[in-house]
Image 1: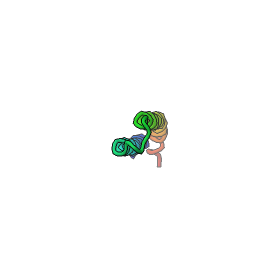
Image 2 (image 1 turned 60 degrees about the vertical axis):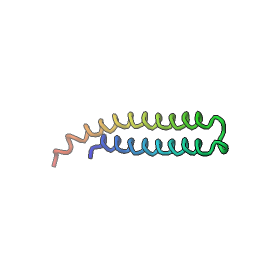
Image 3 (image 1 turned 120 degrees about the vertical axis):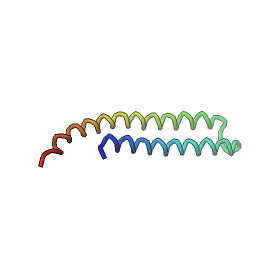
Image 4 (image 1 turned 90 degrees about the vertical axis):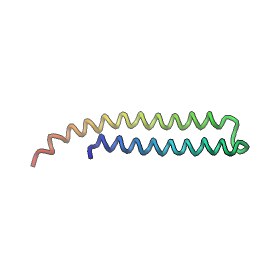
Length: 80
């Protein structure tokens, strides 16, 4: 498996985990309106959106680094 594929797979897994946490917190806030602050939904949305955006941006950069490393490793694969 190439490094690019590993970066994509890892990014998808991390994003799915963050989406699951976001879903859990949103459902918790809806199920327990007396236990959360009035602006709970906005705060959770902003925080999780920022976390997911940051991870996506980092994966974007890591993808190009992995692509460069894959290209560098390609000529060495054919050597004995």
